[in-house]
Length: 506
Image (cartoon, rainbow, N blue to C red; front, side, top):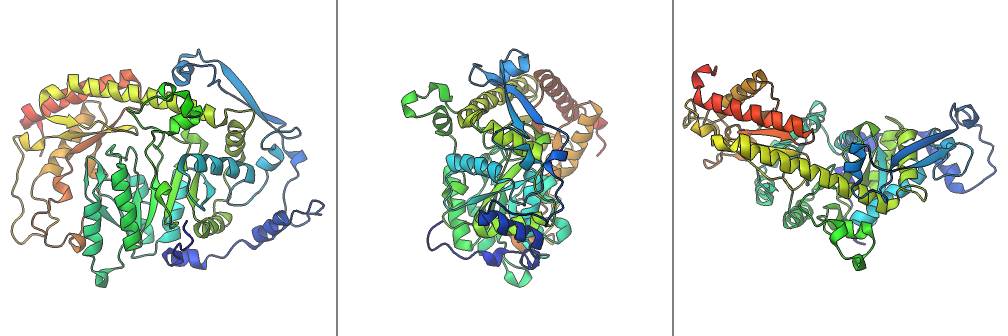
């Protein structure tokens, strides 16, 4: 952060301001920070490590330095392996004596350090620190409560993952969807909302929540130019940005690290060279809170992630965690600390795994697109985007070609957000048809953020979001067999839906 970084404490919720630190945790932090070695600790009810019923943990993982394509070889069962260990009574990167003991909300210092080093390497944020979480969902929901009060409005993509956007609704926080195109949210649309906001009807939004790479559900990725515009607007309008980026390392159509000359640095430096800069890396004010996770790059059941933020928000997050979920589990912290340590993969090894992983997902993406071109495109009833990252494609269905399509449903007295067409009805009818034919794709209506004339106004040129819910989300995270079966069935269902409309119950 710059030396003149603004005071952002006014963004804290009433709950965050009033929540008291856990006094027992505060006392123990004092003891640890004192550096005293000979302390007779009679304060905490911590089970003694000699009672822990395990002596070591052995992690057998792919040998990423020996394999040419670690992910493909691991799946085929031909990848060489290596092992690293966490011990209770022997030297290692994170002793089980500490890993399985009570600690504080930021996470164990050893694990916190390796994740801070990783964050510094890829994102280079000035004067930020990391707070461990139980994965992205845990981190994001904590941030919603940290920053939002009942009656607040938060900004987000007009199509967003409901597992996250539903979370703060019970706290009285409402969403304002920002119009999107193939490149993600449109900065000028966000500016329009902020500029025209009527504060007599509610506080102007002060938080923006976005997924900038492989956005769920649309698969869009924000360009560097848009990221820069969004950050400048955040400074202008005093916004905090929640950068939820679980797909950051799953960016496609980039040059492989192996083909970048070695004179340009280590493997990890070559791997990172062409990744798009994060919004966090642009942050000079401390107004970006970035959420990362191992769910998409190692395993979702690990439930381990981290938030990168300035020290003010870090402190408040630790206070929240100390009196809430408590610290993340020791198994995950031990694994990550050993994996990134001297006897593990190191950063270079992790990047070799990530490079191989993104090539595997790119192959799956390309296979789905090939199947779409073969099975769906010839019908003329749908098109598909080519995502630059993530796990999803966004398939647009041309409902205006359906015999039962009805425009002009809205009269002059209707609000600007009332639908003009029956596209939403057609979408749900097609979804039911897909279900009948044993193919499950997600209809865009479940991702759409409800509109309100409060921020739309009386714009007669506005196309309501209910007239733009003409998409289905499909994933390429599955097997080729499943992808092919799904595209075959989706293509047949589309053809039947459009060409035998009497079978459709509208």
